[in-house]
Picture 1: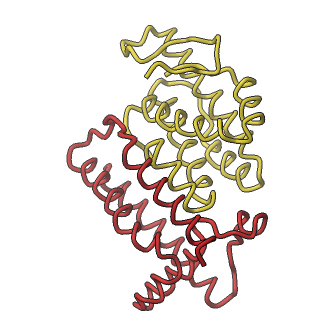
Picture 2: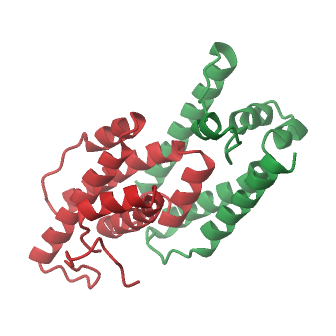
Length: 138
Length: 121
């Protein structure tokens, strides 16, 4: 899991007309599953497929599942978490503000990466590269 | 416990889908397709509601005609979902390496058929 520069993610989404957003969805999904330690929704690739064939409707469900999954990841680490965030992400997505949901989800993932690094987590998957928008090595 | 969560999820989604189909049938509620509204072209999911209604009525030819690529793909996609959830219920461990082959294959499949559907008459 890597931290992502959120501002850079937003800029990339805008300048690539949303194509970076597809990659972002893929990475966020898989990294959330890593953070929880189990698969809580479809994999990143399948999430893209389902969103594509349902014309975005699956994306609403995805927002909710990510919210629940991140809450679970926080509870595992005894980090403070808001039980309503899943609903917030969904509602933002419903009103066409999905980008804000994506930002909030990424912020939570960044917090988890920071927490794991501070706890010196044994997992070798955690790093805190904050110099890029999360260019991955895998 | 995990099995119960998975069953609860299937029931919730099933009930929501059924509720939407009933609202569509009797109250005229419809989910507009933003892609078709903007471009005038069918998206991969256009006809999904009609297909589901014909499937419920066991009218297989009409369900196929509503959205042929999705009609063909649906058993495979549902089978994939059910198989993953079954494995998770059985073994408990569900984080496996995510192969890109399946999503890439189905994405290409739907892109090709969507183009054909819109331009091949």
